[in-house]
Length: 171
Image (cartoon, rainbow, N blue to C red; front, top):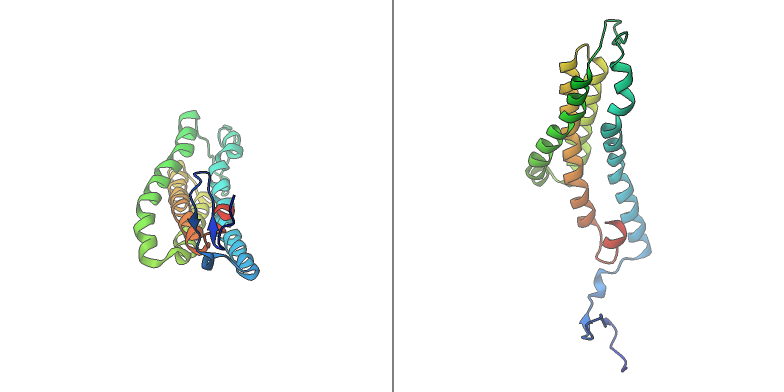
């Protein structure tokens, strides 16, 4: 096969493709992109905590002798536990719908730092201080909104900061 000029790749189709080498990252740029991605995806750990929260909490709140942090009785039945688990999806749906336009308005980085983080924080504070099941539902919906914000923002942010040669690795 004949030699191709620099900047030309030969895909499986057999036809040469011109590659823009100006999009190739320097080693320092790669490190910065990786670090930005690591910090951006830390919110995904919160997602795991939000989604997985109900698993360990269910047995204790289904115990007829369970109490809230104030010492009052706090018992929920199986149907109410199902709602505690399920309302997260309602919040996530809402967060996904309003997250996109909100992200366009304030920017991706600010979206991850402010509304997303505040949704997680507020939701967990409400759940921690809850003395009835309706406050737990409310906290879970707010956590779900944060989950929707996070999922709609992080992927867009990573694809915007990554150069073309790093997108597959970071994506």
